Amino acid sequence: MIDEIQKRILEEVADLHEVPIGAYNIRANSKMAARNTTANIDIVSKEDGSGIDVKIKPGTKNESVHIPVVISKTGIKEVVYNDFFIGEDSDVVIVAGCGIHNCGNQDSQHDGVHRFYVGKNAHVKYVEKHYGEGDGTGKRILNPGTEVYMEEGSSMEMEMVQIKGVDSTVRDTKAELAAGASLVVRERLMTHGDQSAVSIYKVQLNGEGSSADVVSRSVARDNSYQKFDAKIDGNAACSGHSECDAIIMDNAKILAVPQLQANNIDAALIHEAAIGKIAGEQLTKLMTLGLTEAEAEEQIINGFLK
Image (tube, rainbow, N blue to C red):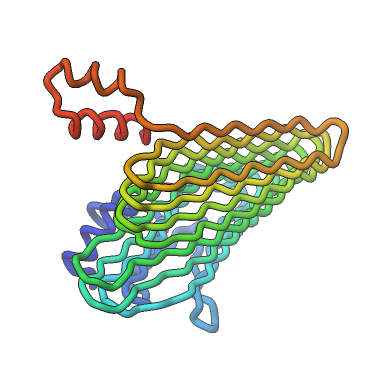
């Protein structure tokens, strides 16, 4: 059963206000809370209990899979492995995410490893949201690992979001692309207090005509720390682009580490990075409309992270 706290967290990480349509697997406090499969999408627990296998039949169109995780007890620490097998010529949406409510004095931690095997000419939209809350002294720790293996002509859009309440996170994403495969990543991140967030992207463009576009937008406030570490290897005639665009505030620290490696004469690779404070003229303009400085800052940040 899902209690009221868990329901609220599900709304934050998966936009679920009720039981979703289609396939889903809801994990709450290290146990399966609810599951549904469809004719085209099967969800099977791993024999050792460490996670699930999601199997999507070839040609599946306009279907979704929701696999949120909620933790509402202090002191829970778990590692979960979820594997996704996306059949050829399918077009699906996968919504993941983890929310931690910690009101105790022990750390709560979820490390989730998601491995995607994307078949030829398949398209996947993947949404991952992380959220933390609770007034306890225990930390809320989330370490997602993502591995993507893309066959010829496949495409994947990844939306990675963390806006509130996560004390520590290391987001480690690896991708290998075959000929004609396309990967688009959009990361949105905000840290505050003493939080720490590290984002690592390692993309291998192995096939002719493969492409990757990795863009991160982030805001670091108070005494928080962020690191964006992106490496794209062009191993064929391909195109790759990575970008870090960050707003720094208060006493925060941000480190951007761009890496491009061309191993083929026809590999076209670009990196862009910009870190700076909110422009004074932006604040002044909004304040002339009647907003306080704090309200103006919030308006600018909300627009930046949309």
